[in-house]
Length: 320
Image (spheres, rainbow, N blue to C red):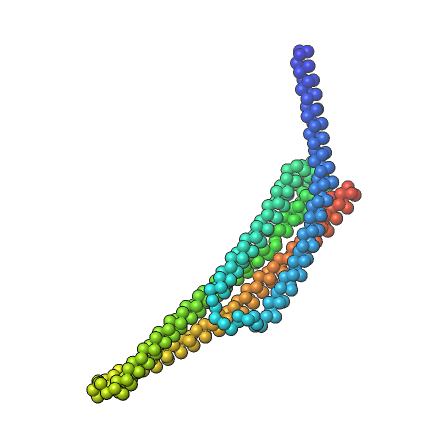
């Protein structure tokens, strides 16, 4: 019996030591949250708010600049597209895809960070939850978004607000602009194809003109020398007329293809101006709306953090 009592006392002592250890660790965690995590999180929100304000101003300027573009005045404008132009278009599409990917990663990373932090606080703040729940006379054990430990209030509000940001509008605008760039790339390819057709016809025409002049020269020589009969000369003259008619047909065909090439050039230039203006304007507009919503979100979270701090100092749960 004495042995059993001794074992019970020993077990009781161990339990007390474990409880004190847990309480000590809990206090250190609480201190780290209050003195390190909370201020750093508030500082991060201030930084993100400043960043959102700056990006909003930049996107407003960019959008306005694109709306004011009426024409291109660079030295290559008005000339046909070449391989370097098409390569630049392909590179632009690649950069746009990378931009879209980076934006998606930024949103995903922020959501993952806040979600992980919110989940951690939900698990390790059961006592605080219970305190705030009793303080607010709530029947629920878990606090609401505006009722609970200050840090939890901020993180939960942040996580909820992130889901409401118009990030998908930005993604759609970038995707649509990417399709416009692909359309432009296809048009540049069509223009280059038309250019090659013109070059091929011009080469063929030059070759036939040269052959025609040679044949014409030989006929003149034969007439002067008198070596050929009148019938032969007449036959050659008739052949020369036929070849001349063929040259006229080829010239008309070349002129028609040159006109098509000119139209294709104009279409490429108009498409470049229109698509770039519409595409970039749409992207910048969506980014403006996103930055505006982000700025509002961070500003509200900063205010919430101040109110939570005041409520915490007064020993009251935060409520807004």
